[in-house]
Image 1: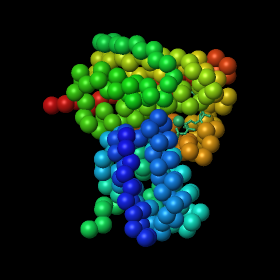
Image 2: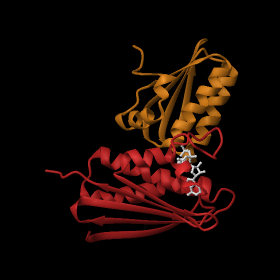
Image 3: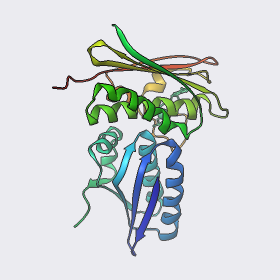
Image 4: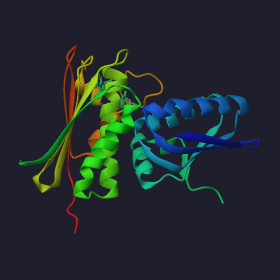
Length: 105
Length: 143
Ligand SMILES: Nc1ncnc2c1ncn2[C@@H]1O[C@H](COP(=O)(O)OP(=O)(O)OP(=O)(O)O)[C@@H](O)[C@H]1O
Ligand SMILES: [Mg+2]
């Protein structure tokens, strides 16, 4: 499990890596929330390209960050989800709250 | 249904064991040569059941999680995940999507995942005694 962040003035991009479960989600949450609070981004991009496994703890992680972002009026983009991740995401109805898609350009 | 193969595993309810439990089941099931999707589905469902033992059943304690994984004829597999934790007062309510007693970081979707990723889900529970979750799935025939 690892998290790498990258940001410009408006956009905070978080590259998630490895398996997301209850055990690993806590560390990821801490890193992401720290960056959100520091940068107050207009857009948070969560990149799932290197996520090899996710269960409902991952949904909790995404939903929780959505709520954090709402506080500063930001929006959430979820990109590069593999078929497995997409299947888990779809159960949550998160696509009504966040933009799901490929990486831009 | 005739049983062809089986393993039992008892693990301590440390969150670090979540990945160990789903990997153990996945390695055992590999002998049936499941599709990648079937394997992901089973791993995810097992992860949900095991995590619930750690997060809910043994909320403020450490206890044992008992896992039995069995292969039957017709490529049917079952995974039983049992705890001796706090138990569930109202199973019907607990199984409703989005219901959670776990606070803001939980989605309340664990049972919904188990239900939709497996063919069958049975839940038995008694307050103060513990909970047993049985997951069942028939794998597709590989040519
Ligand atoms: N093994 C268990 N022992 C005691 N209570 C349980 C157990 N499994 C589930 N529950 C109860 O059922 C509720 C729903 O479980 P479910 O897995 O669907 O959602 P969750 O664990 O709360 O959230 P998520 O799985 O999305 O992280 C839990 O909040 C808990 O109250
Ligand atoms: Mg759960």
